[in-house]
Figure 1 (cartoon, helix red, strand yellow):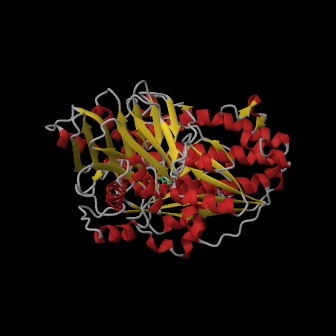
Figure 2 (cartoon, rainbow, N blue to C red):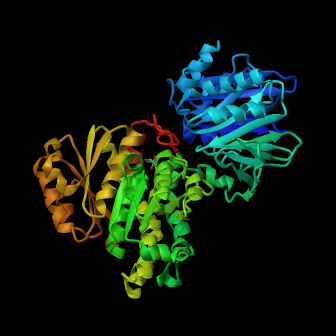
Figure 3 (cartoon, rainbow, N blue to C red):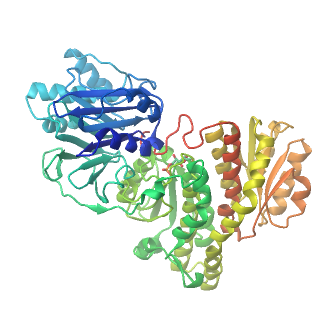
Length: 616
Ligand code: F6R
């Protein structure tokens, strides 16, 4: 987590950095700070607890216009509470250097103790301050350049970092480096930008370089970009062109990014299937499968690793792959996988799912799986992020930047990609007939319109209904089969943005414990489309009703059985069972959004969370 941004050029440094911080605020927002150097060699550091807007207010009466270079940071606390003194940038004891950092320095205590023994004193509890003091210590003791000091210091570091450093006496240079945390350099016309992702860069240039692990970038006014390794060897500069537009980063008239992203789904699903479901639905094929036929033909098992919402998509992927390809599938939390003793064979395909493409646990799981000989397939959203680069092959979900911290359009995009993945593999392995594939392929093409229809018919209804449930303190979300992961995802959505306790369960498990919770004050959201488990879930609905619990049911249009029992019914169009999660998750997104709004919560930046989880 945390977002870093840097700028060197002829524009207003402060303005560029603040705008960049706003774009990166989704990565963390408990404090923010900025370091500016003017051409007289004056280094000023301003920091404020809370969101970037607080930093702006704090800087209102400060001289920020004379800066010629600067770095900035928005924080998601790991070491030390959110506070002014723990906010970045941190500076060296003699005030010569300022540094921003995203990641964690795992051996910071050892380094800190050694520096304290040398007489260093510290202002903060952060691991980051250790790094800037270490760089300064090496620079002074070795009488070397900032670049050499950064190289030497980074060799001592165990952990993850994306850093940018400025030096008081060198207002023409930023030194930046990365390992396991993302960093993008933008090459503009007489200016350089750097940032944790491309969103602060796109409005200045489309030419970017994604830094690789253990590479250091030297951004110098009036000189071309230079990259070196920790060993000071020249590294190759691979300039890519951004496929991002500024309008994708704005709210487009919606009050929140989350609502915009919910309403974007008809379009994002269309973008996701474009070129992959073709010939009127007759052909469904992902290039990642086509290019790796042998791997997919010899595969004997899939292991899917992911975290959070992506893990819920993975659970749906399990049903899809088992149903369509008849191959066993294991779904693992990446954080558990990496520290278990996984048994992986070279006939396994490991699928890693991650919206951001930067989740630390998922990245670590990928490295372990690759090390054990598995072929690793990535499903990501952010082009150029670490996971697509670490995996052997994969598919982008192409839903555009997801800025609301609660994942919505990325989830439906992930599920859509997993559906197409299962169909592609089924075609390759002959586990479905061309006719069966065509039936689903055709139906996939109707999904964007169906989602559009749900948004039109249910938005207002859910908005009104949410008023009744705003003060409930606990919710149960229940589903079976394909609807079970949808229940988990619905519960996660509610808890993360409204801070209301919600539990997702396979509906049949309810009677083994959670049923004890049900009373008039505990509403249940039951996902009950007309599928092969419909009759079974009707029983579960009855069981909740018999105990006085109120019921919100997501059902297939025309359902009159559950409609009789439930207190509120949200109807969705009929689709094949394998496509139902995309359809049934839409009303659940709206429920969580409106309950959170009624409670006055900040849905786009819920407390304690960040969009990109680059720490363990
Ligand atoms: C919830 C949410 C998180 C992420 C999780 C994994 O709305 O967004 O649970 O799904 O942090 O993130 P990615 O998909 O970027 O690996």
